[in-house]
Image 1: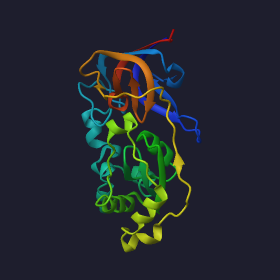
Image 2 (image 1 turned 45 degrees about the horizontal axis):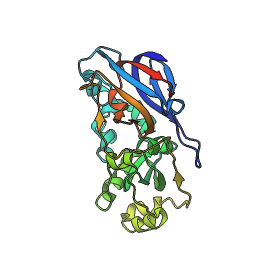
Image 3 (image 1 turned 120 degrees about the vertical axis):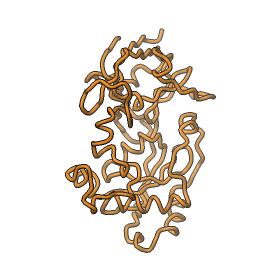
Image 4 (image 1 turned 135 degrees about the vertical axis):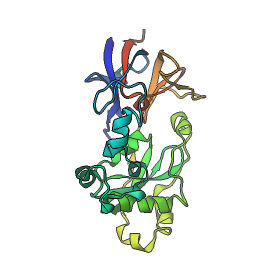
Length: 270
C-alpha cells in the first residue's frame, strides 16, 4: 500500500468500554485505518515540501502544527488566548474573528480531571470532551465543572493549576507509566479549592470515562522521530496513542507534521 499527499494528522473514533480507539492517519483526503496495520511495517517519507493547512501556500516552516506565518498571526485559532483562555479578550472587541469567538468560545465549556501520566486539570468545549481526552492520551477522565464560556473555564483551570498539574508528561503517557488515581475522591478534594464564584458550576455526575488504546506492546525508552531530521522514518507499528504513532524504534507525532508532503508505505506483517 502506498499513499502520497499532504499529511493532515490523526483522527479517531471512540467506541467506549474496553474497545480500543480506532485511529486514522489522514493524508491527501484519504483516511488510513491504522488499527488494521498494527504489527506491520510502516514507512513515512518526506517529499521536501510543506503547505499551510489553512491557505495551502508553500512554506519553508510551519507554525502551530501546520500553518504558514501569515495564517499563524491572523487566524483566530492561533491567537494566544487559545492556549491561555483566561486571557480571552473577546469582551474588549479585539478578537481576531468575532464569529469564531461566538461559535467556539462563548459557549458552555467543561473543566475536567484526566489521568494520562498523572492527574491533570484541563478544559474543553462541551460535547468535545472525548476528542480532547483521546488527543491527550488520557485513560480516564471526568468533568468537574460546566461554565458558560471558555474564558470562565480558563480562569477556573488557571486557578486550579496552583494545586494540580495542567500539562501531560508525554513520555510517561506513551510508556503507560500512569498512577492509579481515584477520580471521584480527587474531584471532591479539588472542589475544596473552587473559588466561591465557581461553586455553583460544579458538575457532580459520578460517571467517568475509561479509554483504551490500540497498543500491542510498550517501549522501554521513548525516542522521538521527526521528518525535520530524518527524510524517511518508520518501523513496525506497535501502537497509536494521543497524536503519536508508536513504532518499535521510536514515536512519531503526527500533528506536529501537519502540512508536510509525504509518502506512506505499509507492508503487511508476515
